[in-house]
Structure formats: C-alpha cells, structure tokens
Image 1: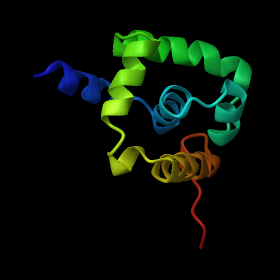
Image 2: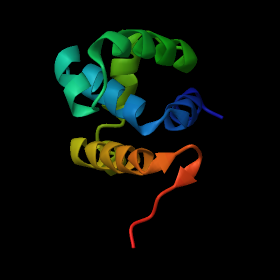
Image 3: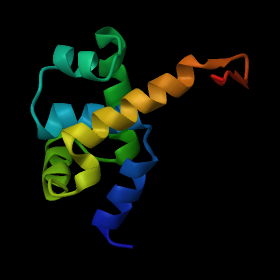
Image 4: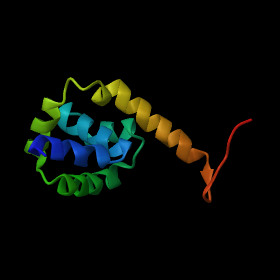
Length: 105
C-alpha cells in the first residue's frame, strides 16, 4: 500500500466529527472556536482530541495540510458533505439511550 493509501485508510477510520474537524482546521484554516461550533464540540476538549488524531495518523500539522490539500477534489470531504455526516451522526446519538435506539413512529 502506498503512503497516501495508508494515510487515507487511517483518516477514513476516524469518526466523522474528527474528519470534519481536521479538514476545517487544517485544510480550510478555520479558527478552533469556529471549528468547535461547526462540529458541535467543546472547544476545550477539541485540542487534545486533535493531538490524539494527529498521533494516530502519524503526521504533523504541515504534513496533514499537504495530505488534505491533495484530497481537495474529493466530494466526500467537501464542507457540505462533512457537516451533513456530522449532523446525521449527532441525530442518531440523540435517539440512543442505554443501548436502545428510540425510533419515531
């Protein structure tokens, strides 16, 4: 597997909110507070989560910027697609309680 393929595999294994966080922060250059609003996360917790994600990806900030820039044309990593996936994931989580999934009739 190529280095690029290995990166993409690790990146795709991240949860949707973290993928969106990394794209908004490192490809789009948004401030952390704005990123936190977009992914509905606590800004104080987001910094340490980003550090863990970078360690898991095995790259630094500049390398991540370059990798994400290479993926700029991927429609699954567009701002709209990322926000849509993050919000859908949040809705699913809101309906879960104690391992049960509540369904609307």
